[in-house]
Image (cartoon, rainbow, N blue to C red; front, side, top):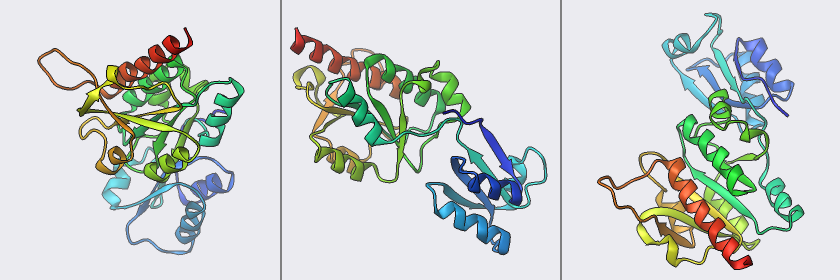
Length: 249
C-alpha cells in the first residue's frame, strides 16, 4: 500500500496523522516546548518507530512550507514499510534460500533507491535499513528505484546488529563489503545470505562488521580505491547470484 509523501505541519494535523496510523518517519518539535498538545503528540510518537528531533525555531521556519508549523513538523513516509518476517516468508514461498540486503546508515536517497532497484533484479527478498541515521522511503527514493519499491519490501529496524543476531539463529549468514577482507571470489556465498553495505563515507560500522561471518573485498584495478555504495552492493550481490546458479547447474 502506498502513502502519499507528506510534510505535515501544525499540532492538530500532526496529531491526527499519528492517530490515523500514517507512517511518520521523523518528527521535529520546537526545543523547550512542552505544553499539553505537544506532550500529547510526543506520547503518540513514542508508540511508533518515529524519530523525534528537538530543534530551534529557525530550523522549523526553514523547513516549513506554510509558515504555520506551530512548533511541530512531521515527515510521513512515501511508502509503507515491510517486515523482516515478511521477507523470510517470501523466500519460503518461492522455495529459495533467504537473500537479504542490509544497509548500515545509507543517507543518500538516490543510493537507497538504486539499491532497492538492484535488489529486485538480483532476486533479493528484501532490504533492511536502520531506524536512525539513514534515509527513509521518500519520494526521491521511490523515483530512483524505478518502480522496484512496489515489489521489494523495505523493513526499518531499531538495531541492525540485534536483527542480524536474530537472523543468525534462523540460519542466516552475513557478508559485508570492505577493503580489508578476502576476495569475494574466494568465499562460499551460496547459503542463506545477507549482504551488508556501509554508508557513503565511513563504510560498515565496527560493530556491524564484527557481526558479519565474511568480509569480502571487490577486486579493483583503477586509480581510486572505492565504489559507490549501490554499485558495491550490486557487484557483491551478483557474485552471490553467480555462485547460486553455478551450484544449481
